[in-house]
Every structure is written in structure tokens, then in C-alpha cells.
Amino acid sequence: RGFFFFWARGGGVERWQNPADAGIVKVQACGWSKGRMNEVANTYLHAKADSWSQDAPGAWFSISLPPTVLIEPTHYSIRHGYGGGAQMRNWDLQTSVDGESWKTVRRHVKDASLAGGYAVHTWPLSANSHAASHFKIVATGGNSIDGKQLACAGFEVYGRIVAPQCEGVLNPSHWLFADSFG
Image (cartoon, rainbow, N blue to C red; front, top):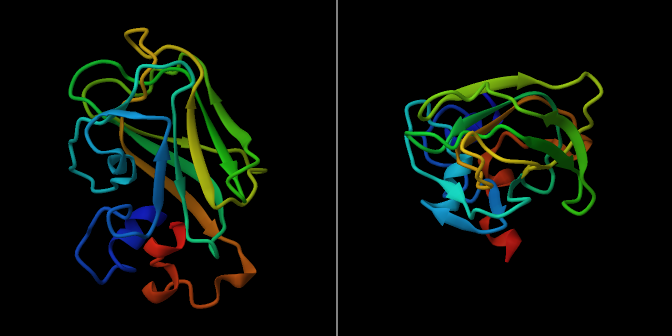
């Protein structure tokens, strides 16, 4: 299980809830057309939600962690956000420390790993992926039906926490930050 799932369970002791709905992470996007934008942070294994962005070139979504948390990612997962087609094929995973300057850490070109309705896949990241507190998916071309929307109903990150200011970060009072985004 990844970081978002861990936090969604209050460190493993609470009943699961979407970490974006709980204020643990913040989701932003270029525009959302179907479903709730917060579904991209849905890490519940059996969740099946229709969720996708507007059909526009360069569609994107991002997930921001609490300000004191930096993760050095080793893998990430995506769940397709539809029971039918329009699976992502061309996209970049970008990371950032500040949410302003982004670095592409994995590029996907004609990647058919997401096959079928609500498909889930996990990809490794290079060993030199830098620690980040913001994660962004950006469409760089058409999906499986040559549309431009990103259909996503789940995103997860795996790796390790590396920030020195994380003392006590596993205490939920340190990472519930719904009000810190205004």
C-alpha cells in the first residue's frame, strides 16, 4: 500500500476515507468534466468511479501533500477513471517541491498498460527521482480513443519520506491541513 492509502487510513488505525475529502492532500486540475476531481486521490482498492478532465490538449491534475512532507518516489499507480475506453496513453508524471517548478520524472508514449475499465497499473521510477511534495499528471497526446481528456479515478505514490522537518509526521494532527490551502 502507498502513502495516500496509509494517510487515508489515519496511519492504519482509522476507517478508510478519500485523502482529498479528508483534507490530507489537495487535488487541483485544469478542469473536470465528469465525476468529482477528488477521485484522482481515491486509493480504495475496489473503488470504481467515472472521473475525467475536460477534453483539452495538455489536460492535467496535481496532488499536493502537506507542506512538511517530502516523498522520494520509487513507484506510482494510476486507476483508469471509466468503465469503458479512453484510457490514458500519452502523459508525463511530474514532481515538484514547491508546486511552481516541475520536473518530468517519467514520460509515457503510447503506453497501453491501462487496459479495460477501471484498470490499475503501477510503474517504477528511476533511482534518481527527486523528493517531492507535489505530483502532477499532464496529457502529452491522445488517449486510447484519441481524445484529450485524462480519465483517472485513483493515483498512488510509493517510496520513502525524506524531509528532515517530518518529525511526528505520522501523527495525523501534523498532516491534516485542509485550512492551509485557503
